Length: 454
Image (cartoon, rainbow, N blue to C red; front, side, top):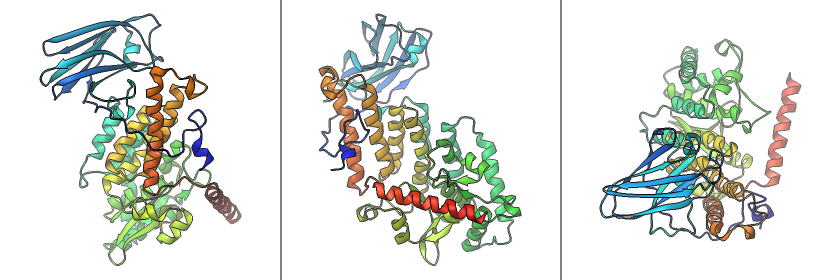
């Protein structure tokens, strides 16, 4: 067994494979939080379509909470029923203050008061069927829809194939990472590039001539691109710096990576009427072009948009036969699936910002559109592991966690293992150190060749 995968969450976000216990967690029931009513009260509204017994679950975040000893007032209103309870504020641990029996479908309103506006903004309220069998009472981060960003991502990924604009989608998603990005200005830049490509001598009616004009505009320095070709950024080829995965950064610097380079190629190609889409390899995106003569072929956007055979890609980016057979890698993605892959930068932003629940919620939206996205599965696994580590960092070992919180700890660590196992079941494998070393050697060689040619 890989030693790195067998460590505790107190040392690593990854774990060894075990049989996950799939706990039945009640479905989140479509809560829509209202705006703050005033400085000391907030109300959440839930549509409960099925009669039954329901429990209200609350979580106050310590970051914005009032001092200990503060009395908090909780009220449920459902039809003619009303229940209230006063409790001392409890932070960073989900709890159940109220349970209600509903004889028929109704709306439930849950009001929390007695806290400051800051504390109320950091409060979350959820409603669950009391029949759910959970190991302790806790908030399931995968079911959160409070985050406006997640709702926006989900709405975008529900657009039809015919109407989804990948340029607008990519820039909108990038703005979720960097709000200073100007959507309309960046779209105008894209349209300006498309117009220049259409005016190039190579451009014609055939797909092959359009493709050649696109390639030349991007990769050959000339008057069509102000003598500034778009290049592979050898200093950050994988986009470890998140801003380097944003389209406006690539347009400004003309130095890209295996995210921005294929996505710009696809965005421009589709605006030019070319049958191009995205495809994946481990930690890498490709362009797929549908040739009338040869069918789907790979184009390597990080290497001049040149055709690349599957066998060559598999030599550069090792992948299992199982992953290829299961359609995980080297398959042409739909337009919606391509947009879902563009959304991974948003999940990465939340993961890097320690907002693990938000990262999980965005990952869920991506996986709903592309359920074979093993990269997002592993990101979700890491987010669960880091969430467990952050919530229970005060304890030197799992044995020291209080009994009342053991259920929540087990839930998070089981989900960590479960999502790694799901990715592995599709053929994903953790990158081997020798593969990473070989990749770094190729990058260093490319740097040396570049410096010698200057």
